Length: 236
Image (cartoon, rainbow, N blue to C red; front, side):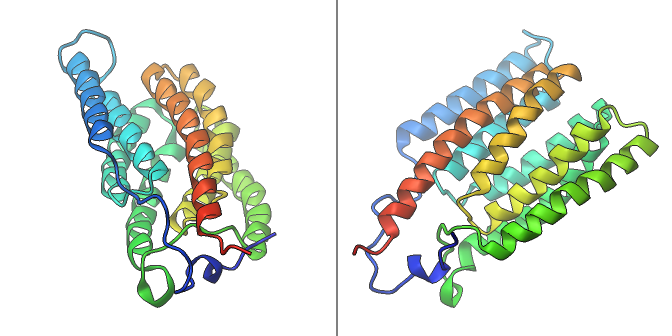
């Protein structure tokens, strides 16, 4: 059942208990892990390409910032889109490659929406997906998958159905994320479960590991956003 967005933005509602900020320990952990992955790649201490290492780093940091509702997830996400465009181009995953272009545009929209998409152009708060949005998703996901699959077959894509399905599912999840809908996490979880074996089959081991990490982060994100919604709901 959908919940009106205004329910969480009433002027006399209690302030959120958790602010969208990262602790110093979190920043240090993110920077240390990123530096380690890049150092191993640049130093040729493993066979992972530098572009895939950068995709791993920017993607991991971006998702964790989303979990924490931090606005910096958007600019880092834009960088991640650019890097993944190159990675998928080399792997002939054309739908995922094209998806990064759409992600980039949605990233700009999401950045603005999180800052000014609430009532009276205030910061956006977490809300539930509306019935109308669910109806659109139930129609557009299978239809979009069929259309993209036919296109990918025509251009000799590596995995037409799974590439198309995850592309459409990711677009739906990204839109819900831009609107800060709680249910975006459910779509990301399904998508990541499919992406891990898909990228392993395309010889992208680090990317597969990244999406396994994404899956764990999505589960954490779902838990954290649910807590935030519960905190912001008016008390009876």
